[in-house]
Image 1: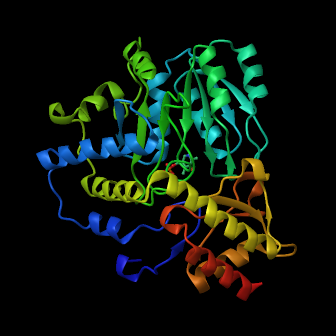
Image 2 (image 1 turned 30 degrees about the vertical axis):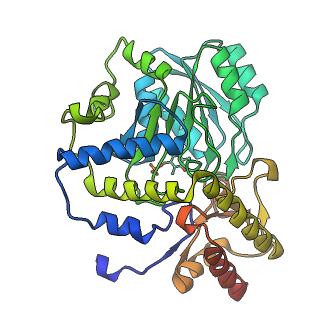
Image 3 (image 1 turned 90 degrees about the vertical axis):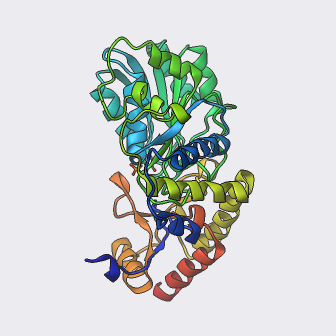
Length: 368
Ligand SMILES: *Cc1c(COP(=O)(O)O)cnc(C)c1O
């Protein structure tokens, strides 16, 4: 397959989402050197836009030059040392991935396991803290893309900080789509992605560390196990004009995220959150009227990732393939226990419009 032969698709799965033409044009801009003063000025500007969109003043805010999973790994390998204890909340694929990484760091991992489709409760975290009263960190997934559950953060954050621990949050599918307030919620280490609600191409991960997390990093006794993700070096790479060479920055991808963040700020963060809820409600009414049923209860439902059981008697794989092949619309299938049972319909960023929903619903009506 060559690029020239690709079929244009409408992206309504769990990511990537459709990108704005301005983002695509930005990627096609001529390359400049990654140590060019203009590129350094752009990195400073991107850092400031990430701070504005994450609602944080954290100085250590930057892009990892790799996708969301590398942001996850950055947070954990820098904060955990062999022998540390931590609590990881697991209610889907991504909590499980965090636990795997933490174990590879040599940490003792206490898992709080919740059925898929549900969220971790304050009581569960309390109980975990009884068994492990002073973990180095507690980690949670804000928006679990494998199930479409949205995890409430503030109350758990208070518990974690009262225990003297750090709070680590996966915001890959919540950032720029639903309310996320890093400083107000006292999140110590957070990572996200670019290809979900930000609607930029995949391959970068916005990350931010609180001063408390930086202190933990500065007081490490052992070297960070990963050279590439070691923030004691990466942070100098993001230190403005003093910038020291660490690796060659992915300039075209930074152009794209710069334009995508500019679009978010032009729209306004709150307007963007509101848009995701408005289009979600429209989609939900349409889906339910056709016999689709939501996996997650209304209270904890993520608006931008809709996990739904198909109407009785429908073959999900067949319909999903027809959607792709006959209508060029991509939706996601289920993972884990929900493989073959649910669809994951993403309405993220540029894919979050009434037109997208109407296209999908029209195609479904034609097929069902
Ligand atoms: C997509 C996703 C990731 C992983 O991001 P990649 O860019 O695929 O590495 C991590 N956590 C959540 C919640 C995600 O949705």
